Amino acid sequence: MGWLVIDGYEDEPAAFGVPPYIGFHIRYVCGVLESRNIDYDYVTIDDWRLGNRPDLSSCDGIVLLAGAIVPGKYLRGTPISLRETDNLLRTVPRHAPLIAGGWAIRGWRQQGWTPLRSNLFLCVQDTDATLNHFLESGEFKHQRRTTEQWNDWANHGALSKAVRQHPDLVSEQDGNSTPGPLTYEVEVYQGCVRYKQGCKFCIEPKKGVPIFRTPEQVIEEVKIAIESGVTNVRLGGMTDVYTYMAEGVVELEYPQPNPEPIAKLLHGLRDLDGLEILHTDNANPSIIAENLELAGEITHTLVETLSDGSVLSFGLESADPTVHEANWLNCDTNQLKIAVRHINEHGRKRGARGLPQLLPGLNFIAGLNGETSKTYQMNQQLLQEMKNEGLWLRRINIRQVEGEGFQEIPEVEFRQFKKWVRDEIDGPLLEEMFPLGQRLNAIRWESHDDRIRLPHNITDESHRSESCRGNSGVTFGRQVGAYPILVGVPYHIPLESISDVIITGHGKRSISAVEAKLNLNTASQKQFQAIPGIGEKTAWNLISERVKRNHRGTSFSSLEDAFESIDLVPSELALKILEVQ
Image 1 (cartoon, rainbow, N blue to C red):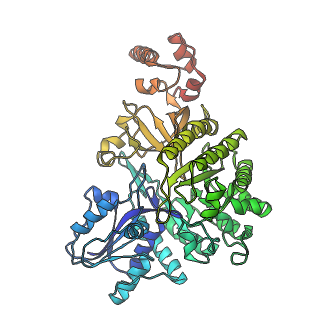
Image 2: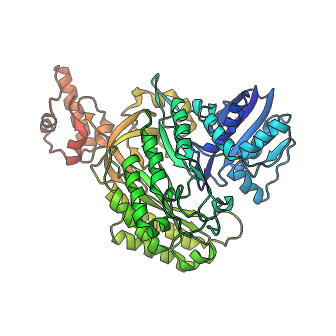
Image 3: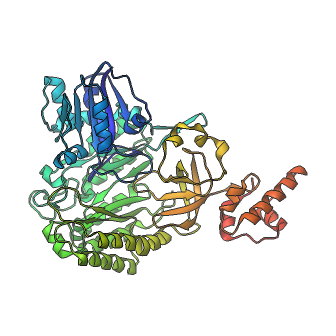
């Protein structure tokens, strides 16, 4: 059967491949095999869990990519865990050479993980290059890819089975096939411009002087991916979109943004037929703050070319100057405020899907050296100041530091800070950014009755059948893109279908909604009850009146007709949601 490639999903500082994303490192591995015309199978760890595994009795070799040291909570898929990795290593045939690579493999090794298995190589450099060397020589040896190999394997990976056979490339619903939510993360450059003295917790500065792919190279790869069926793309691998091909990377502490190459890249991607959603990820606030004029040109291009709902993740990590100095962090609070104001000024206008075009996100890391209880007070003060100023932050990510050489996290202060952020910042911000009555378009429904898609949501076809629409339960979904807001609807909608919705309520990090354009003459009681101002009694009265009219061969002729018949004045939200067809 050739080789088996197991996608355990990656979640690294500058790389993401948890569904609906397909990461670039797993594609490069498949690209090596494609470039050599070697037969192979590709399987995701979710399919492996469901028992969808090829016969390995004649397997020539196995590559496993494990990319999350401590998997978090994900809606659509979960990276392979250490326990699952150990079990997998015990169950696959020992005659087959096995190369295991990725962020998690390196992290677990540093923590002392030493699995006992013959014919196993734990890769700590580039998994694709290590595989290529083994295929050439039969020798296990850590390798790094060259620039030429990078582009070659990227292009071959774009047409590989990791793309063409990915479960999210195509969605099946009631026997119909439509483009799925697969989002293709393309690597634009490697490393960080702060490679001389970068953030101590991050691996990117350790890669040395950044290596940039040209706009033409990235566009060519994406063009091949689109020919393979991809419609959604995120520019990844970048620690900072504003320093793509920047001036003075080697000489300057704050390299000067170079607006022309990123404009050429983004406009070139936008000119490709078949591309729908285009997003990016990280940005360095200090580069924006120290180069406002040049950064402004890039921001204009981002707003002009990216799909609405774009988020620039800002890595402040801590508002404490002591922590900033001890860990060589990349920006201070003053620089952050300047950058947040800048993006708010240019990016708050809503786009075609009902979302602000471009907003900042903010990252905090707990456990960095120099941290004290006062650190969390400074973090709170900073967030409160930005809230008082009316600035929007699309999402605030609070995580614990990974790796060795850091300090213990004060658990009480950490938990209190997270709760305060969710209660005092996230909740109120959601109400401003996603106001009641706002319409959001193209929500893709992913799970029933749980915020995490469970196996039966995939294997039981009734969850994708139109017959479930309007039944009792809860449906969760999101728009395609970076950091999409989770939407919950208090009745069932067929999974993998797509709806427009009207926002009806807010949680701490999610919103509730009801489908737009619900037909008064066909809506179920549960659908009626989901509309603010229509409780169980009113919903039943509408259903009863509709049944009576059906017996007479008539139906509701208008919203006014329906609500006058039950002697009720409808709410503004009800008028936005309902219609007569």
